[in-house]
Length: 410
Ligand SMILES: [Fe+2]
Image (cartoon, rainbow, N blue to C red; front, side, top):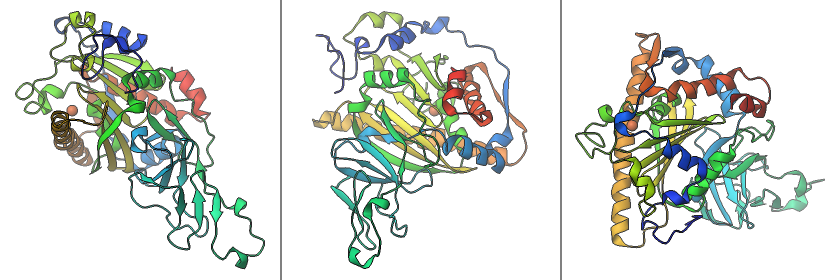
């Protein structure tokens, strides 16, 4: 389960408040009662061009997506030592391996003979080695070239000189991160220790991957991110699903925001939240409090009572994105009731995200493309959105090392 604390009266499902770290508990204690919550009053706009201009897109690619660490997948996507999978979401053919010792590597998914793609299928498979389908050049999971058929016909050739091209990568807090540029410095300074600790306390590193789905969207990646940074739309866009005319799970309140380096953590009370539940370690805190993280730049982590969601939004063009949605549970379902609960949750969340949040992002892309409005306005109920854009803007303006910029951002 990957949990750190086991009180005698811990909840059967989910997580007790006592299993969280001090910073998480402090954030929960700062949630006001719903009737005492006061949203800030702000004046924030961003030009529509940040979602439409090719030049801006290219700058984001070079300064952020090809320079800083980005999440590739939850560790649970490739949990076993001796496994390999392809990953293509960022428009670059990648291969993720977990070697015999359990260490993760990220390579370009391309044979060093003449560039053929080595592994197809973005699903982990057990493998002791990787063999190119073209001429059967074979590599270890650590990237060493270990086999070349008819090597005696190659003059002055040493296998040591043609390993796979490895990209800098790191596993932290239950996510696999990589820098998608073999020439960029292997600087993981933007990863945050508090985030890693928070995710460890949620049990993300040992979580079970229940489901994964890829969405291809006609929207700029930032428009896809926006609804996951604010609760303003929840009572409105989601009125019939999870809002007041449906499951009615959430209150119309702002979250408690915390900046963790370039990342954002939002802690908010669900509709049924009241401060007294904090005194009861036998309740599943995820049933009363929602934790939503924006991992810089493009990833969302959200807790729900019986599962956790990781969503990685990968830009594929100025007006298009690929989104990988992952549903993670504390453990694999071991009885029909749990299986049924997870299956229903997986279907609801795909419906809510897919048919409501993602659709809204796509309609904004279409609407902004008309040129009818020159800028987008953010109200106090959406205050984390401009905070998110400040981080992006800082990195777009930063010419120096990412770590230095992250420090000045903190
Ligand atoms: Fe939403």
